[in-house]
Length: 241
Image 1: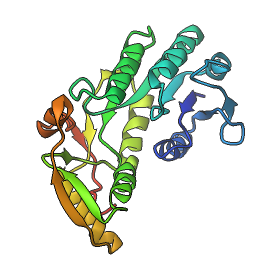
Image 2: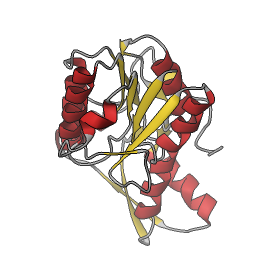
Image 3: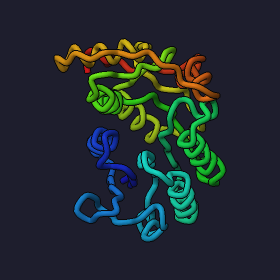
C-alpha cells in the first residue's frame, strides 16, 4: 500500500485533497503541529518531528505553503524526505513566481528551488488564487464604504476542487518537474470581481480607481500573475462559485 504524507491537510486545499487520496486506497498521513488536527505531529519551521513524520512514506504532498517562513519549512521537509528515501515530492506553488516582485512570491520561489534541488524526484504545480481566497479578500476590501480599485489588475481564480483533482493525479503519477500552470476558466478584471461580490452580498459601495506604483504594479498590469501559455484550466467559474 502506498503511504502518502500531506502537509496542510486541514487547509482549504488539503480538505479537498485528503479524501480524494483516501478514495484511491492509499494510506494517508496528515501532518499538523496540533495532535487534534493531524495524524502525525511535527513543526516544519523548527524541524521538530519532521523526520519521524516522513519515515516510511512513499509520496509527500506539501500543501502547507501559505504561512510566513514557507521557504524554511520546505527546506526542512525536503531534507527529511531525502533522508527517508521518499520517491516523489509534490509541491503546490503559485502563478507569478519569478515574474511579480513581491516578498511572498520570492519566498515561494525559494521554496520551489529547495524542492528542485532536494535530490528527491519532484513535481511542482503553480496554481492561480483560489476562489475562496478571492472571496475572503473581497470581503475585507468591501467593508469600507469606499473601495480602492487598482487599475489594470486581472485575475483568473481557480476552484480548489479543480486543483485537488490535478494534485492527486500528479501525486500518483511519475515525478514531472515543473508542470503547466493551473488557472480558472476565465480572466477577470479586479473591478468586475468586486462588483460581482457586491451584487452577491447585496452591498453598495463607492469604487475609487487607484494605481499601484513601482515594479510590482507594472508586473501586475502586464499580467505577470496570469497563467503562462500552455496552462491547464479548471472548469468552475467565479460566478458558479
